[in-house]
Amino acid sequence: MTGSDVPPSFRLAYVPGVTPAKWVRIWQERLPGVPLTLVAVAAAEAAGVLRDGGADAGFVRLPVDRTAFSAIPLYTETTVVVVPKDHLVAAADEVSAEDLADDIVLHPLDDTLDWETLPGRPANERPATTADAIELVAAGVGVLVVPQSLARLHHRRDLTYRPVTDAPQSRIALSWPEDATTDLVEDFIGIVRGRTVNSTRGRTTAPAEPKPSKRAPAGGARRQPAAGKTGKTAGKTPRGRAGGAKGGKRGKPRRRS
Image (cartoon, rainbow, N blue to C red; front, side, top):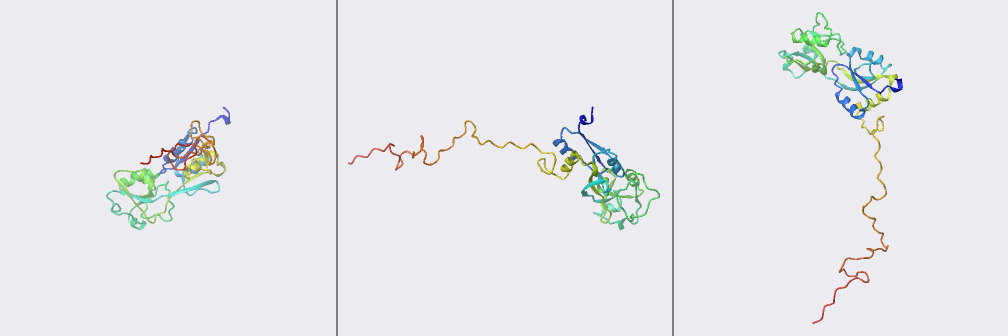
């Protein structure tokens, strides 16, 4: 099988916390002949996977190297603190970083937030992953500040979370290698941007509907004759109406008494 004979396919990378199901469903509806494969990657590994051709595009966390990658920012996540349900924070609607000053704030090695100064007291060691940090929170070792999607991803019944008003925030973007903007990448960009299948900006368009024929369909209503033209019905007036056409029936005159 030659390169031109290889059927097209699309590989989409996504980092933890991102749910690409909505866009995948639209892809399958619009391009049923092009299979889409999802590639789960760690946030720190996403750039390498895209650079090495492991995926055609990906949902990543900003920032990315804009000299090598194109990126379309999609949304900014709320930052939350994950705590045990019996923690004081659980009684509040939201907290500030200062409210965590007396807590041990865990800082996993795969942290996705760009902290200038981490709030609270540091732990003796940094957990390897966010999942490991969640286990430590459940054990009562400390609290964890993460994007809300990661708190949901690692949800536990014995834990809860509250927004942190002044913490750094994580932004999600669609990214791909700048020198590999293929037709399929353009198709996926159109889906993510919400373009319709008939959009002139998208590559994939639906076939145009045929224009209606100017000829009247068989058995259809005939064209009415123009005013002044003769025909079977031309010049007729309703029966019994005064001033009817010549030759029309007239009512019998009444006899005088």
